[in-house]
Image (cartoon, one colour):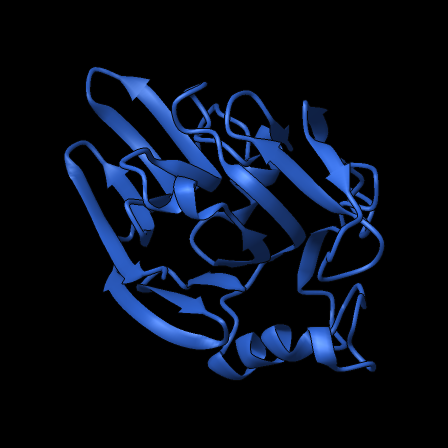
Length: 219
């Protein structure tokens, strides 16, 4: 289980419910731009950065979740009360929820994704009947530019993922999710969650030449 929280001052990354890193951000927007929010690839790119593996239960929030919230989401697989709930915290903070139940619909209702070559599997999935299969070449969900802009500097993303050991140990970047805008001439704003050479990374860029990584062993 992977989760990242952003509150305009810091970014925190969690793996299986435990925090593995944090970093400061600038006051500039991490979301505004012209590229869509993407699940399974780095927005402006194609081919070399596509995720290879399965993704399920993607939730996106319009607030920075607490460590306790993240623990709840990690335990969700085993907790009947919150399992598959649209709003597991009893509020309206989850603004998009993708179950990958043989479709790319947003269960909250406002941000259905466009499915580009993502297929679905039923074998040993963490939730429901299906999980999304990303082929490492040309499979991704395209959500929308307006949704990414709505996140701005205060949001969280949570999802379950599984990737082959051959993909995890390779020297190729596999992007799980991205809200990234490259304006040209070296100027860019946005963020990526990606795996590279057995490490999981959160990468953000807030202005020309300003960027940072949070990294944690993904073994």
